[in-house]
Image 1 (tube, rainbow, N blue to C red):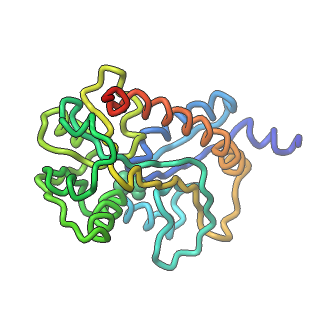
Image 2 (image 1 turned 180 degrees about the vertical axis):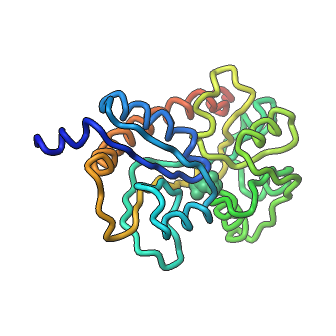
Length: 234
Ligand code: PGA
């Protein structure tokens, strides 16, 4: 529609995302801006509590979340991409070549855990708790990158979103483990407060995300194939 195209010639999109989404949000924004040269963007990356605060205060146009809030926030949200979580080890770790590793075996290893407030931390703790297990947490770190370096340093295993590993090449020091019940299948949601009037740019970006979701899923498939060592075990 002419009016829509006009609106998109110029515009501004304020996006606010939860920490782990920073592994793909800038690239997605980049591809969006290539299609819409007159659009300027801002990206805020922050933790879950701050994202919910900003959502309630209507500070941004759109939000990307790992999970919709369990608190009462009136929200419109939709899923646009997968966010699988894997147990990750140094590639030299003996478990890297094993198949169907029981979670109890992982509980015996040193685990590196995300900080309180992280969505991934909560799911990981719930997963162990449901299995009646207590993880052996050696260290807590507030950053996925720091956790990757701790794994390079052989300080322990961790559970990470596959998105954090998309830049790891075939010679990466990291390997995904084949643990029973994993990957944990999380999904990315795009959300805004219910009743919010969306700009043309915001609506176009929501639509754009659907196609991007497929591209992100393909990127994850390639990453999974590169970082799997158990296939070579036989
Ligand atoms: P996190 O969130 O980066 O805060 O762990 C991501 C998620 O909820 O999956």
